[in-house]
Image (cartoon, rainbow, N blue to C red; front, side, top):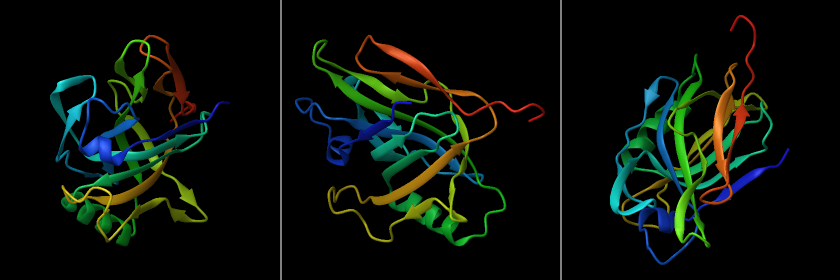
Length: 191
């Protein structure tokens, strides 16, 4: 299976420059263990330079090995308010660790001269669980703000998300016109 790795520009995400054609990622929404983070960051929409979108975070990196059961790993930067919410979650004994999230990663098509969604949850949110490594949940938040972009104040966050027991779709594209869908998760009888 082909891996999907997208290293996105935090600087371009927060301060979009039309003439820079680098990867940009938005964590559109995320609910972790029943706690919805607020989409409180206003960003330029790469698909429509004159418009804005709101997001929970600017993605710095997103990685998926590409197999049905592989986790989606997201590194991103969240607002001060969302940093507090995630910090609280990391100190709690989470009896439920479900995650509902939506994201878009934008790449630039050099031939068409437009941005397009290269990796996306599409119009639907994805349902997963916080991935565990060695018994620990893959959820981290920095207590210190990131110094790459100092305004607005933002904090690095990391989460690994494995799929719930249902077949879901992730949209992938290699250009503005060359698109396909991959399955994330496996349906299990009785679930």
